[in-house]
Amino acid sequence: MQLMNYINGNFCPQTSGKWITNLNPATGEEICKVPISNSKDVKEAINSAKNAYPNWSKYTPHERAIWLDKIADKLEEMFEEIAQLESMDTGKPISLSRNVDANRSVANFRFFSELIRGMEIEEFEMKDATNYVIQKPNGIGALITPWNLPLYLLSWKVAPAIGMGNTVVCKPSELTPMTADLLMRAVDEIGLPAGVINLVHGNGIETGSLLVEDSDIDFVSFTGGTVTGSKVASSAASTFKKLSLELGGKNSSIVFADCDFEKTIAGVVRSGFLNQGQICLCGSRIFIEEEIYEDFKNRLINAVEEMKIGDPLDEETDLGALISKEHLSKIEYYANLAIEEGGTLLTGGVPCLPKAFENGNWMAPIIVEGLSPESRCSKEEIFGPMVTLHIFKEESELIKMVNNTRYGLAGSIWTKDLDKGRRLSESIETGMIWINTWLHRDLRVPFGGVKDSGVGREGGKWSLGFFSEAMNVCVKHE
Ligand code: TXE
Image (tube, rainbow, N blue to C red; front, top):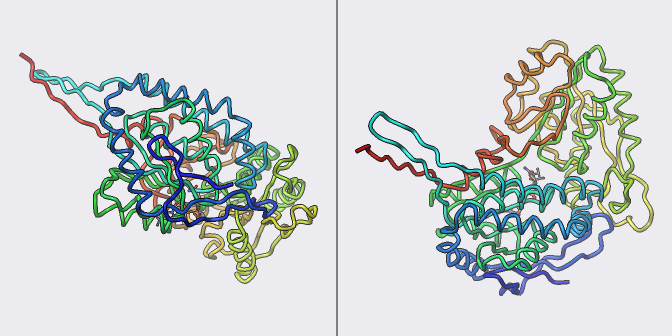
């Protein structure tokens, strides 16, 4: 199977004649060939978005919201296909693909349709004048997405971007192109005006960077690694592109002795290992109050070892495969580094699986204790099924350790004392904190991080703000 680009309402081959082979992470079997789009393909996609912009940007928010609902309806029809493709492409369990990826992809379009319908012109009254704030489209956008939550994150960008009147060129990860292709089939089937959404497949260097550098691109919404985010930011800077960067994380799960023990065990395991730990929001550092450390650690090991690892298409599976051989090697590297840095691996390693999966990228969840908070494993993003345990006594010591990382995206605090939880949250350098829960998402709230976790916020009105330019009109009273 050879995927195609989607440009100006047509599926078309890339002109480079070059391909990437997309492998199933669980079995190592070939899924499809992915085009590597070149400058000609990228330029054609950008021109298509430019040609569609004048009409699309003149639609009313209400008219555009109707199109978002049509896309949501079509994705709902394709729900099971989204889930199956996402599990095949990413290696994640089918239960996760349904409950998180497919669900949220539909919800993203519905949510932004409703939000955009409800938009009002903001007014600021003076004694002798009235100010009206109009949110105008930015123009032509590049939406660049990673492999961990492919359609979930692509829809999170596409919905508000086109909903606010922009036209876009999408560049999904070359590792997980399947549901981006499905989204193009969906918008094609409902007859979305040509050129509003375009898609070029390819890798970062040969395709993604061309998009970001092009002077006809007015804004870039990027989710991916911090290293890549920095490259995207520098190449976008010279043409003053509006930029939203959602990057890596090294998030803390903070467990106090007064927590609800069993709920916290379940929450911390989910936070540490959902999607095989391949979510920027995962809690990969677990700080446990000294007096419960041994009990919590032993209960945590049991809970992790009870997780079912294996066939992503089995409804009972809790943990699937890692995205690629390269990524598996990265996790193996950090497991060895943990030992070199004086840590002890309490569980984890290569699971024994049926023959059908012998060519997959497998790692049973790893728990490490005994590492200094200064160690690389405690500070660097690993982005896999590996967590480090740390003991704390005083809150002041805890805050220092929690903030001792380049990242600042998310985190969770587990305690029955909610005032302590709220107070502690304010001392943590991060964009989001959950108290006695994790990944509990209200789409209206700001989403994003500080420090090396990114620039800007998306989500709710923050997305509407990023995907539009605020213009003030001041009218002097008679
Ligand atoms: O991200 P990349 P990858 C982190 C995690 C992971 C690391 C690398 O640490 O190990 O990032 O993952 C495109 N100009 N996260 O390889 O390389 C690329 O083709 C323009 C956290 O997926 O950043 C892909 O479409 N585009 C993250 C997208 O950028 C470029 C989720 C992301 O690729 C480009 C995933 C360039 N120069 C990984 N280079 C999160 N925050 O959720 C690459 N791309």
